[in-house]
Image 1 (cartoon, helix red, strand yellow):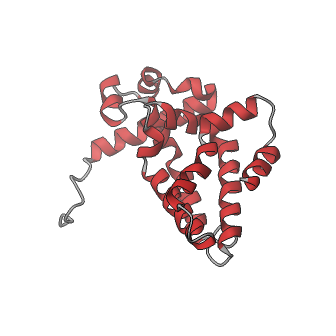
Image 2: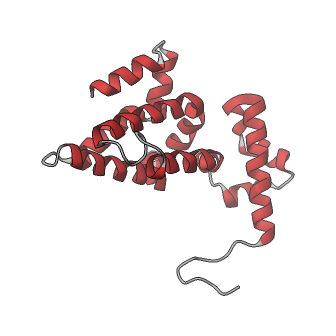
Length: 188
């Protein structure tokens, strides 16, 4: 197989197997113990690899949490990029924006604790992911279509801020329902 320019170094087969073992072990521990099961030393033991192997692939719990969320993130992106309206193309921008916000809340309801770890392990972790950049770009495009003269970049950040996983988990633990949160976001 010929190398592809700009593709980086291909992953060795043993490294790919170890990565899969680590992610599978982490998923198993989270399913059994909740988010507390994401201790890297426990993941290493469950995967049957050394702790150094885990740290080479995943320097912190946030990186491992992002790997656990990868498939869910891909499905979410597919839904708003090419899925059916109103989340996907074909609906007016305002309806798509509302659908995006509500779908994000649904995602937080299902994966909020894991997203919280992924977003807060380092101070800027949430903003440094390709997922956040794509979500932001998507909102900028919708907002620019809805209100061309507004600062769409600022507005996108402002709309994504209440969707921070820690904020959502806090609201749910404080007794807010998902419908109340969705209603509040619609009012924004």
